[in-house]
Amino acid sequence: MSQQKKKIFPRNYKERLFILTSQTLIYYEQEKGNKRRKKGSILTDRIYWVEKVEPEKNAPVERKFPFQIAYDESILYMFAKDDTDRMDWLEAMMQVIQGNDKLSAKYHKGFWVDGVFLCCGQAVRNAPGCCDWHKESLKLRASSRNITLPPLRERTHLPPIPEDEGNACVEVVALYDYTAKKPGELSVVKGIRYVSLEKMSGDWWKIRDMTGSEGLVPSNYIEEVNTDDSLSCSVEDDIENYPWYVGNMSRVKTEQLLREKGKEGSFVVRDSSQKGVYTVSLFSRALDEVNGTVRHYLINVNADGLYYLAENHLFESIPQMIEYHQHNGAGLLTRLRLPARETSPTPQTAQGMWELSRKDVRVVKELGSGQFGVVQLGVWKGEHQVAIKMVKEGCMSSDEFIEEAQIMMKLRHPKLVRLYGVCTECFPIYIVTEFMSNGCLLEYLRQHGKELQPQRLLSMCLDVCEAMAYLEDQQFIHRDLAARNCLVDEDLSVKVSDFGMARYVLDDQYTSSVGTKFPVKWSAPEVLNYTRFSSKSDVWAFGVLMWEVYSLGKQPYEHYDNTRVTERVMQGHRLYRPQLATDQIYQVMKSCWHEFPEERPKFHQLFNDISALIDNKQ
Ligand code: ADP
Image 1 (cartoon, helix red, strand yellow):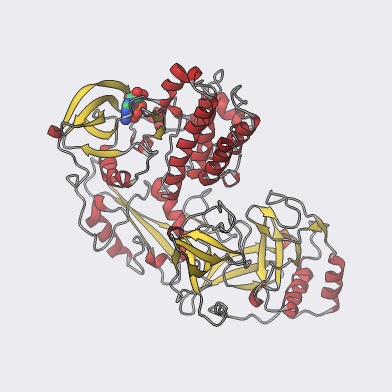
Image 2 (image 1 turned 90 degrees about the horizontal axis):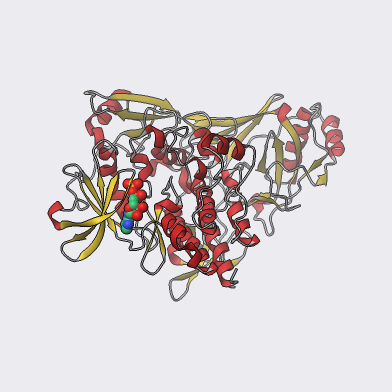
């Protein structure tokens, strides 16, 4: 169990086979059959402490004997069979590392859980130890024995889940994070498993977590787990269930499949050697190309067991890595986009349900103009007011947009500007959306900001945050969140618009992070450095949007150009507190601008924080 994990929970560990030599501790994953796959290794001269860890409260027997290995910037937690087994490992490790000049004087006796050390509450992953490390006794014991390493046990499954008072217990997994809102409720974390105890009235389930705490969660936040699953494998690791996984398909067949599927799908993941070595095969065809190109990329695993295709983009699992590259090319031929499936369900054409008939759309008057062209007020089928983005030829990669419009149409939330459909058979393409009578938020703030009550400013931020929490749940990245891309409705509620649209702009000045139109002032450091977009880079932009709201539409860092802003942000400078923002509101903004994406709050957390401020009339 590596401390690199975003959330460390006692269940969040996997069975690994460890082999210790004088130079390395290597760990392997036991796969189906008898295959072993090297997951990573730690150089023993990088280790700076090895020690027991305090077990969690009421730990089941298989987790009663944890110990830890601190190395580089991380800690690896391991569970031994019993205390003797644990002492054997500690002494063996000590014998190997006792000459290290980096050995620490202090260590953490508590686990790192949910972003803090349980022993001292420090919230930085490489925070110095808080308890004295009495390594002398370990050293002595290590040198007084001629250590033979403990026998390595090879179990393919962890022990069965303990039965609950004689009844077989049903396991559930959380589909989303849920934060308890009232006493009696239980917070759950996406991907973590729980024991379900009872279905209550009103769609609530009573469940128990690993520490034994019990409480209620809404039933749509959890799902029953297939109990045949081995506990040693987390839900997200089972790549066989993903549509992009094609098993042990040959290279030739893969290339055939990719070329056949062409635009319908562009990549697959295959087990290229039958030894658990996976390859991503990617197809791309430019408009003026006949045959297109297929590239094969090996999926690499680094010493910490993290996966990557391109340097600097590391992930805890293959599905997470694929998800990222579906949105970000980041060194690949193109981004991965859609999987090519052997038996693709009903092929989608541009004439699907999202295609509206142009004759049903009547243009009324111009509302404004933007990146893609003019935006008009229109009427659809003679009765519904709509906004129509008229996209000029050459401004948008329209094929890609059409392909994904159907996905974007499925994103529906009261705080998202609804996409009704598109008219794509000729230029200008129409993108037909919900009409918002008070127009763009940025303009609204500039013109009417002074008339707005402080509570209204906060509720505008909350509206945006709510929409973004929904997009975060849907794993959809906005990429250009800013006041200019939000719209104000008749009742002054605010909705988020143009989600995902940045990907289709055909203008280098807008898409390249050094381009003059790139939203540098809304961009997180990892976007500026590595073009690494994520929901957490959206969180950064949300902080800047809050700043825009509270400064009534000012330009962020108004006296600096983009180059200077990049320099200053990298040096740790941040936007100042706008006069209208209280300290508490400024703290919320600032939390969005943490240098490290994983330290920034999620939108759900921000939603709770802002709601609390609204309740307290801040
Ligand atoms: P683009 O996406 O092409 O850059 P924008 O979304 O910025 O275009 O729209 C340009 C302007 O049109 C906005 O500033 C706003 O005033 C107006 N507008 C856009 N969409 C709507 C809408 N759904 N309802 C009302 N006005 C809109």
